[in-house]
Image (cartoon, rainbow, N blue to C red; front, side, top):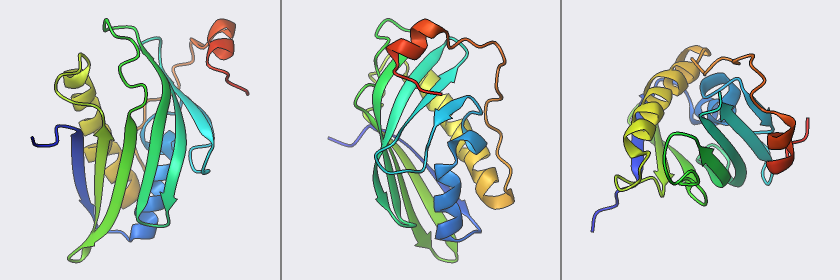
Length: 165
């Protein structure tokens, strides 16, 4: 059976090092509402988008300029029945040379078409990878979700998600 994990590939006119460094800067391409370190092996960070999506992620593998693997430790969606759908999935970034360009293959291992959030998540990841991350690598400027300023992360969520400021 063919692998059904969500995948998105980009080619950029920058080095593998530039791509590798940009990927780790989640605040510059995914969301400005990220707490914690996104570039340190073994560290966890917390992502949220308004009250729609809360996610705790850990960097579990780094191969300098070639690969980054993040594991979703906890997740909560407020718009689907299985609110924990992403738990134990992995965000994998493979970086290689293709001709004169750098190739970045993003795979969300465990996000498949049978998942309730697949269509929404597919569209969101496609936008972030094909536009925001690609632009960050090529121009130094991504289009992350801006801080929403609503302080949706309340004391209950800080305790539940074990977030430290």
